[in-house]
Length: 216
Image 1 (cartoon, rainbow, N blue to C red):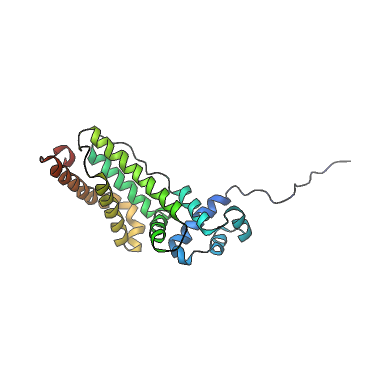
Image 2: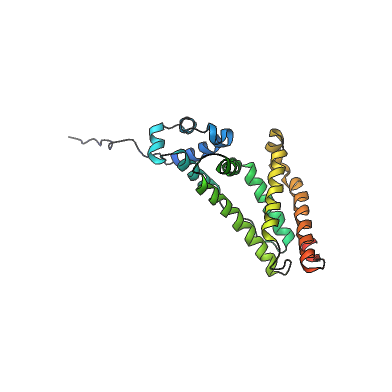
């Protein structure tokens, strides 16, 4: 008598479920923000049951934090030989990040964390740390190369860089955002030049002498 194998109890684990849920959460959050974000909508978009979603993520806050941390990987770029190369690379990486659903959702998380009654502080802190570390490494290399002095206003320069890139993305129409990645160098160049000019001005104000290596 031939034995027949029987399937084990329960449904097999879906290896792609967590990735689908994270992507669905970012898409929903980017579309609605905190006020319109629901677990039901995420479950429908991800193609899973709501009960399955709650077993893994017991709250909206937990789900958003997971999705942000999973997709908001640290901004990485090849170290250049000058501040100009590094600033251009960071602006390029940052623009691609903000054009991505994960990046766009992180903007909304930052806004909602300060304006809504939420528990998004953890996700917000992760985003801030990720960006601050990338900028700090960039400017530390510039200090080591002698392009900046140790007392340069790094935080102010960093905020100017991120703010300029973000406002540029916000000013784009939907079709322009969709096409931006195809001509990203055209968008990056003037922003990088603006930041480099600000850095040179700050360096001049600090030392009293022009810093030619920064602006060339």
